[in-house]
Length: 249
Image (cartoon, rainbow, N blue to C red):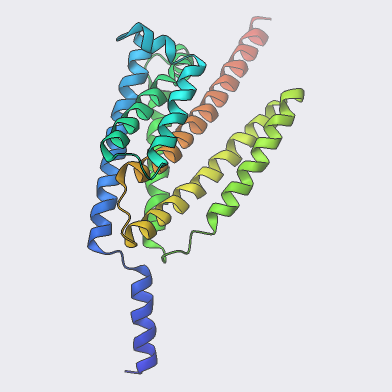
């Protein structure tokens, strides 16, 4: 065998292979995300049903909840934070993320009491999340890192478009924003997955931080898919009402 060809294959293998410690780390990160989903689901259920601490539920609809979420993100990201504190902050972030969904869930249950739309939104978000995360894991290492810049630029466009749309209130522009945001966070899933692999390969096995980054991507995917489905359901109801009115005439 040609020595240069053998060396090239060896280098390509090192660029694509994920070591066992990194694979174990990724498994722990994904399990942590599953736990965060359970906590968020409990928080949203508690808020919708009016269960649990009333002060906690009322706080979920106040600016204080934003402070808790931002404080949790800052505490988890800060390098000097104790690991136990990081896990506590991660749980608080997941809980308040679930509590913040109460208004969205109320809309869905009003339109679809069976919960089919909500289940479709969640299952679609999870399917898309793991699909793009897996594609980043099987791709050549560091090949998806450039996607982070493109996703950030796309989110910048969405932000300024949504800001301008506050004055115009165009429903078509709002729909475009939702789809562009969905594409951007699909890119972030790939980018964050590969960055986690690189950090873990360098010896950084910060499970709370890495789980937080991917959970934020998954949460963003869910809210946008839910909004898209809600928009479609709204259009269906309008069409049905219009047809009913024309039939009555």
